[in-house]
Image (cartoon, rainbow, N blue to C red; front, side, top):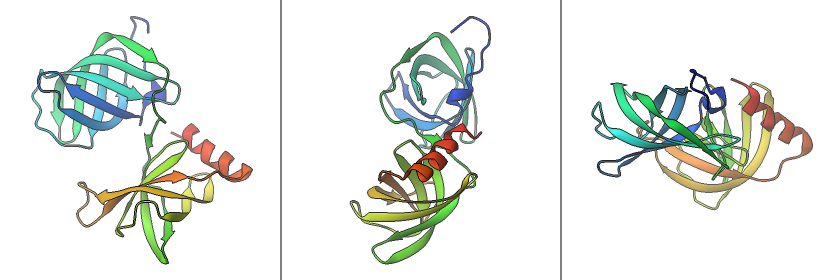
Length: 195
């Protein structure tokens, strides 16, 4: 990346993992914005932090994984601001990139139960959502999702279901999606083009 300040919109809403160097504590979050000079992150796992803490950062984008060192400059609630220390290294993606989404809802049908869901993140092959129902790992899930590109009907396998630390009484559920038909796949792919 060049010396001038360059925004990297491909990594906005991308999943990030940061590891504090002094104690190897790993924290997860979502990139709010990223440039050659700074990064803002909304953390999803809480840990006490101090300004000046130094971290190794991995940001998982669609086209590459970025890796760099950063120093915590400021905290405001769950939002963290870092000073980025070049170089920013680019590697082939090491996992399916997940991106956070806001305002998408739908319905989950599993084991005879139908419940409302709030979509939290998406990837090319999966979806993460918040549900008030606890479901079994390995169960077949049928999903109707209201997206900005229209209703999407798909299915998949429940990969995990665990209590949601951000919403008492709710569960975070991950689903690996089954193959979709041509139209559903196109509608799903369009979600990654929308800001």
